[in-house]
Length: 304
Length: 222
Image 1 (cartoon, rainbow over the protein chains, first blue to last red):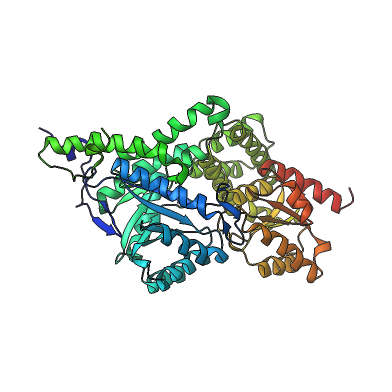
Image 2: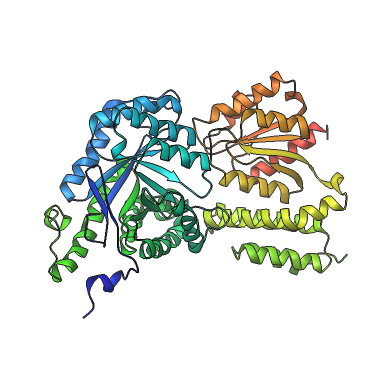
């Protein structure tokens, strides 16, 4: 009879598992609970920003949001990280000091500006939290100097983004990552197959499976972008359709073997965590059926 | 040269809506081989891009399609049409010269690329400086190329102020009065454009083309 692995995921390569801070990700789907990554300090996060240019934010609200994600992490047994988006160089110290003071979660150092990203990483090293940081991200257009700086700072983990504007196909995503891997192969590699809208979510799923199969690195994507850029969602379908679609976009990635999901605004934790936990629990039973007991923190033992 | 027929317009539109860069490229190549005037092809592409833009507005196609089409048109124009147009010395037939780029600190260029493709297809000579462009590079290019229009893109609230800084730098260098400045990007508003002293703002790529045409007309006193 077909095994669990063969039933859905027949990978060519052994699956790699990495420990980053308190989180273990990767492996055969179901082995480790999915890692959900909520974004915070993004540029139009009105709930916390007072002045994004100068880095003035509402600490209480930001703290509540981080705790909200942690609450759902505990409730579901899923794992979590924070995608910390640094809007500008002026915010680096304030944001990193704050985040590290309220949580011990792993942190993805993210910023639309390369300089801010690198400087933030440097600061994380200075204050001794580099071990739980992940550089988010390098893409095929990243300069050699950025890659060298990232390595020199000494971060152990990096996200590779499968984004090539000249080739947006699923094959283009795979090629983009193949080009990047040799440049950072000594690091812990996480692959984001890059979603910008609904059609690209489909392509990201295919690339996700193919890359995980070939390289075995932990894989995921920012599925929420499919919803964020869906212009007709509210106008054509109605506001009540938004949350189910957020849940669907995120959970569909699990069918392609996602180890982590960048689920977008951290405010969406109460929508995404239960949906993903439910699918994790369903998949776990397939392992149990083969005599492999998931860890006691697995969603299957927590959400019922 | 043969004249363009509706069926050819249809061919271009079909090529664009195939979302296949190679197909767009080969269609343009075929049209050139059949003897069509490169400028007429540009004009046909421009009309087809308008249709594509409308489809995006209506939610009939998605961002990835728009980006793919933008890249395909950029490739076909830069590799096939532009060299021919420049070679035949028909520079005077351009509507005007545009220097475009995403400001320093900002690595987003999807929207800027679409605007650049549409401006070219609309008949502008476009110099795309790319993304994360330093202020001094904008100043240098304005001095060197003397464009009618400088188009500045920014996607982040944190990089918006750079648009103002570019305008201020042009003023300091005595270049501001010789160029019309357009600003765009997700957080840009008409109010912001007015506040920083820009001459034009387009809410999307289609409006940007219209604004650019009007700015060129007004700068020439037409």
